[in-house]
Image (cartoon, rainbow, N blue to C red; front, side, top):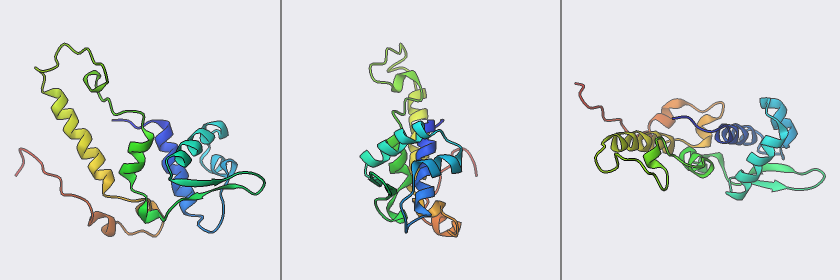
Length: 151
């Protein structure tokens, strides 16, 4: 499983903006802080704004800020909203022509792994990623992972 650069940059942008709650942040400062191209970051900012994760203010003195408190920004929801698809293998894609459909158990195994990945992200918020957040708080919200074949 590999997330797109768009999702990576979206998470970085959200972390940066969350650490600046009393002012608007600009694309250029975030691009410089993370060594990301401004045009690419503009696309990320646009997507985050469309999905309601950030508020943008246009014009001179404009910028962006979180649309809600960091504790209300669920990481799983952010990833789901930014990733274009989760087609780990061809049979997950719309209109798949896989000849093994119906006789293959791999899709179920990979589907379960994807569900586990997203469920793990669902246990965390943007607040958990910010400096000063203690991991035991976040860990208490995680679901236990069931392991098969181990004692």
